[in-house]
Structures are given as structure tokens and as C-alpha cells.
Image (cartoon, rainbow, N blue to C red):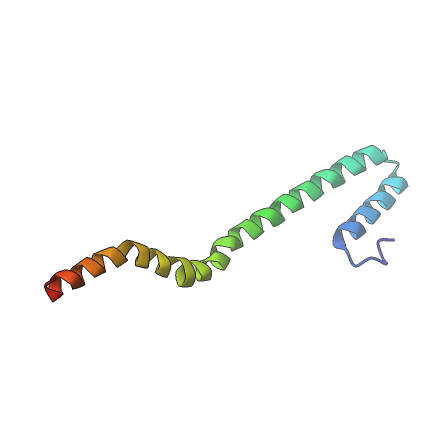
Length: 88
């Protein structure tokens, strides 16, 4: 099963089960260890994805949100400056 699969986790699991059967190790211990390794890998993948988020959100922040924020904050000030310079 492990040799036919392209999934590394499945290959690792199958080889661990075969080795446990050959050595007479209880299957429960192998399953417990495999579950712990899978949890660790899933946690590492989640952390890696979380570290990539700031880079992906930078473009929309700079080109979509910040210009609107500047218009809302600086717009009234610019209008009052132009109205005072024009003498009204």
C-alpha cells in the first residue's frame, strides 16, 4: 500500500505498520506515535501558512485600503485649505 501511494504520510504509516508487525511492537503504540507526528506536521503547516499571510495581504492593503483611508482623513483638511486660500 505504501509503495503504491504518492502521499508521504501514508507511505510512512504503512512502513511503520509493517515494521511494527515484524518486530512485534503493539499496534496501539505505533498508532499513537503516528498520530503525534501527524499533529505536529499539521501544526507546522498551519504556522507556515500563517507566516505567508502578511505578504499576501500587503498588496490589497497598499493599493485599496490606504488610499481610501487617506481620502477620508485628509479630505476635509484639503477642502478647508482650498476654501481658505480661495478667500471664501
